[in-house]
Image (tube, rainbow, N blue to C red; front, side):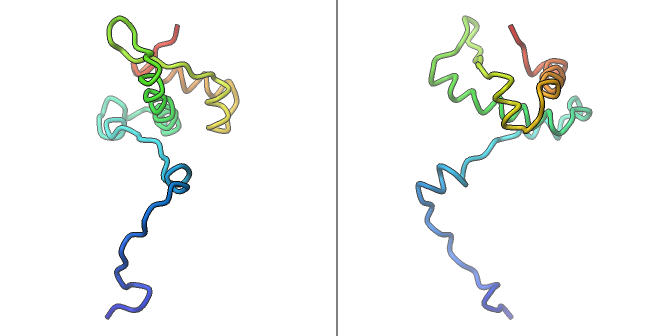
Amino acid sequence: MINDQEKPRKMERVSRDQVETNERFYKIPKALFENEFYADMKLETKVAYAILRDRFLLSIKNNWIDKSGDVYLIYKNIDLQTILSVGEKKVISLKKELANFGLLEEE
């Protein structure tokens, strides 16, 4: 028997405000969890990767693509520090781990 709280409900319409606030999210590639190569990668590094990867859309919009066709991004350490609520040493450590796994190159 279904009580009032368990009754199926149709999904509510999504407002512009929800899309601009609540409906925004970072995508973390499943390969970071399913591929054994990344088994030792720290969870916080995977989250940092998702945040950095999210910026690829802005990079494409700004045509930040090198001669090889690879997308690059500009993202300051302070911005990553702010979004992750960590210090500079932590951000540097996360970026080093990403580089060690071949997911980040810096110039």
